[in-house]
Image 1 (cartoon, rainbow over the protein chains, first blue to last red):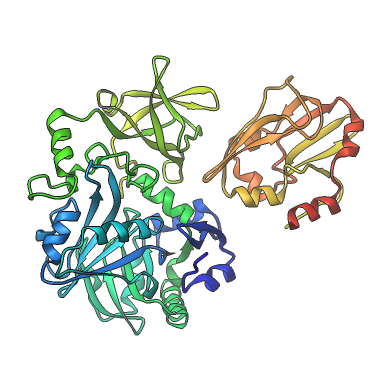
Image 2 (image 1 turned 45 degrees about the vertical axis):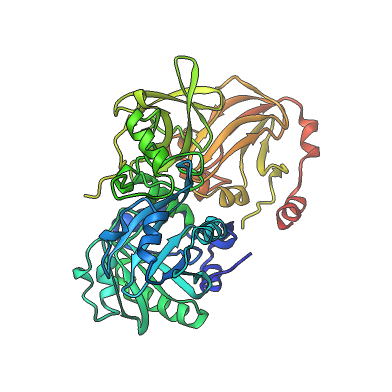
Length: 361
Length: 126
């Protein structure tokens, strides 16, 4: 199992370590609910160094990325990032990812569990004049998320963080180290993701300085458990749960990143057809009464038959009830529609909810 | 990790404290720590019979769901309302306020087959 540069820090903080995407990662420290609420109310720090980073260079890099991703890369300029996805020829999703325009090159940030598959897939489409490098082992990634993220990190850098817009990034020094400071995240909160050299002593220095700076705000380390509950409250997809090779971006609610009119890209033809014929099924959010909890794989039923499956489900610490997502026939996807989730043989009635579940106040 | 002396343990991480013909049942400190934040505990109704080794309820944590197994046969005579209203007490005090069921023990000889504290400590140390 691989370890990030923060592994010793996690174990010394009492992090409960689990395998995730080939890495030994903390699923929680003090507890998922406490960590979750700290990010919603103040600020928390996530080690997400397991994520993969690829560097794309060359004069045809733009046309290559236009071909292999669904979003319009031509709209990116130096200092901007965009959420996107890669699709197979049949329109199924290879992975969802971030594309960064870094001036001289592009950086792709992919899911750890898909790293090998993504690299091979990109390589198989790679034209002459474009280079692809896996930089994942050289990059540490910390996400600092929450309403106090700016106040915390501003103490450690001369870069004016309040000027970095959502989905923009700058290169600069923070805690004395060179890094990419990116205003992105997977929590729905104001926050930053920091990319810097993967090295245990640099990692410890940066980690310690962030915690010193955030001490007055009650900054906490946050594990993968709360990362999952935070993203689900926002209705963000998780690859392997809500999206995979059997789902297409349109039915997954990712039509907003799928630019069918940008020109040709891998998977466009079947997606055009889906767009023309209309969606058969849709990824919806639902909430359950009281404390009934749905889990990945549970059946969604209507009038006695199975009409869909839960793709993600958990307890929402912010809303104090069960929430989830799943695919249902397009005609049943309207907010307010009743959906029954089969929980241990019993049908529990929930309702389709407009995403996100949680609105930042 | 807390391992009280005066109770019996199961290999499924429940405990039972016996007083006369009654038994109080809950989950161990180890179990609550493995599950993480507990948000929902589903228990049988008063009057229900529970059977040794069989599931009698369900415990939902944020991240995981787990069945609860009966340490011995018995009849449910009381439910801990606090656990149903505030399941987090199971995380905080698994052996005290976090008890779940009070049962009338049907067959006290089954108790001798359960783990004592030393055997249970060995089990979770594996």
